[in-house]
Image (cartoon, rainbow, N blue to C red; front, side):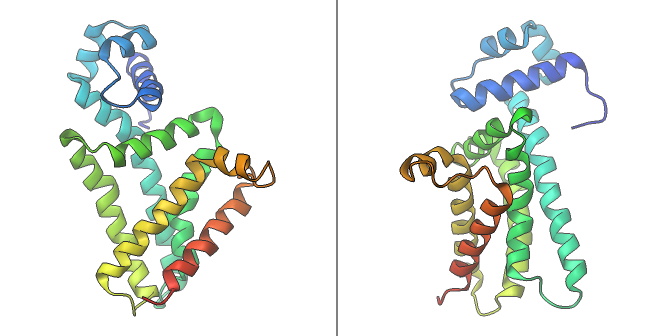
Length: 212
């Protein structure tokens, strides 16, 4: 988030985030946003011009810092590895830990963030495509390169498939934790963040290393 942000603008962004997380992009109206933020339509027009621009600003506010944290962690692991490829488990940690750290901060909108992440990937309207390309496609290609160095026997295409599957495992685990708790009768929970992260990493690493 910027160092300084106008209070009205921040109120609009937070209201948009809550409503979109609950109802989706299309079902969230400007009228609902202004009511939740306790502002008038002129304030939305002044700060964002259009609903599409508001949605993009809201997503950039959340997704940008998360993906930058991912790349910084990958940078750190690459520096530590020197000339050698980064260990597969470290690549997965860089991919997953920043998101899980965000989710664990429930008081700071962690659940809303997960919902927004899922919506951005599942409802890629035309105006969202540049954001998806910037915040997902470009960043994924960076992890793809690291993955191919760690697993040189994988073809370029196979590496994309497996990275996509790994994303799916992670997102399903953290967005549907209540299903896990229910089916296991409470024996399996994701409340232990570190243990959950390690389980996901070990599972995904095994799949990534499996024979093509």
